[in-house]
Length: 451
Image 1 (cartoon, rainbow, N blue to C red):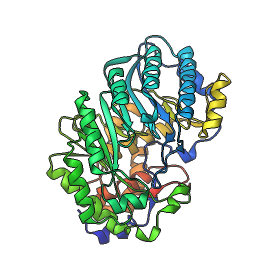
Image 2 (cartoon, one colour):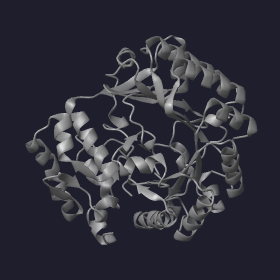
Image 3 (cartoon, rainbow, N blue to C red):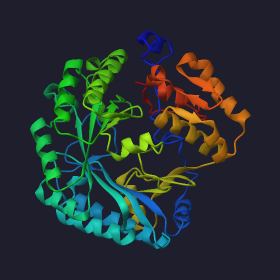
């Protein structure tokens, strides 16, 4: 890896850049995309094709201070049950517009805390989903599970519904760090949840862990990663904590003076990275690790890795439909986002219409640049022949697009007749290099640290 001084010279430790789980990124969405547009896009899905669904449950029993997701607290199950009924009404709207013969490639329940749903609501909601869009062959049904908010009844209901991948949030196992970020979750509780999941025959287990947290040190993150590895996850997301208290108000509870410096963040990432690699995991893109037989690792080796709002994926469905408050759909025509406020979302659905409030319709240049950025984020290289073949763009236009990052990043990138690539030494700069292909105003708020 290139010395930190070179990375600092190129701005790695100062830059704030998007995570590029979409292009253009969500801050560039506008109200030019309407409910009618989204309804028409659904109707345009090809009969007999495969789609993906994301279902957002915004409720949490407690609001973790580090989290910047769209969530709201609840002490009782009544609001959760009421929300589930609105999701079912949204499914009925989807069923009325969806062409015939559609099956599911991927189904993901996220949040918030989807495991706040009572067992009977899990069963009922799953039935309603599959009555609209049944699971296709080799489909994946994944659920985000809070180890503090799961029991036998809810896990039995999820397993009976067909859940075959579970995702648990770890963040960090150190008690001081957990207290500082408002996330009490012991190793013992997490281990028990993992054992309960495995006992029900769920074949795949994901885990999320964060680097860059307050009070985090190389010793502490080493201990947390070692404990996580003892749970034998099939796939791990090693995300950098984004401290954005001006956006996520609850983060003001976290002392800024306890945050590691940018250079220390890079060391924390590298410490965890080495532990995962030494344990036999393969590195996937910029922040994921997977066992060699995991679908993500296989897709990476075969050049089929993709990127969406959940991060890296091997899902190839062209349409991903988001259900629930704030959920974002990615369609061949563009993005459509539901009303972020739960009350506004509920009102729209109860009024008998989709809750779309904003989005972005793609033009040809959007699709081209989106693929260039995705290729860099997934494979660290752009194949010029593939781009010209798929988009019909000229060699001169690609050369123009390659020129700016080549000038800015020098030997951290490579340009040759085959295309554009980021060698090993430049990979900490991947998001910054991807930003050079972004045609939109980069002053929009919400971007996270580049490392």
